[in-house]
Image (cartoon, rainbow, N blue to C red; front, side, top):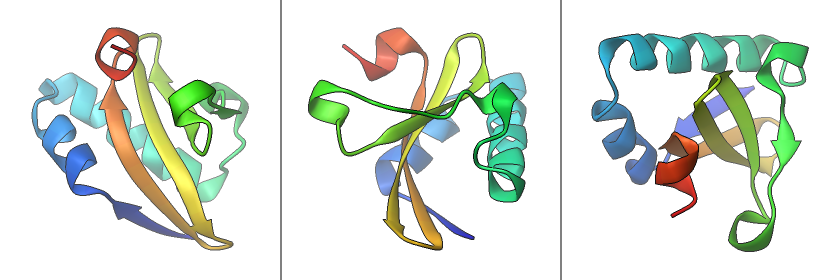
Length: 86
């Protein structure tokens, strides 16, 4: 699986705390090995995010992505619920 990052993800990621950055990196690494790992809580999103899915890095840190094709995933957003759904 190839993982790509949209510019918006990179900007949001740069604003995370050091510990949040590590949690996000760990989640992406686990995702690359097993996208449906139970701890990631991989699920489809609704409404304006209906073409995207989300994984959980911790209780209040989500990473939104979409599949570009069978082996390419584009991460587009990272943050807590308030930041992502405002």
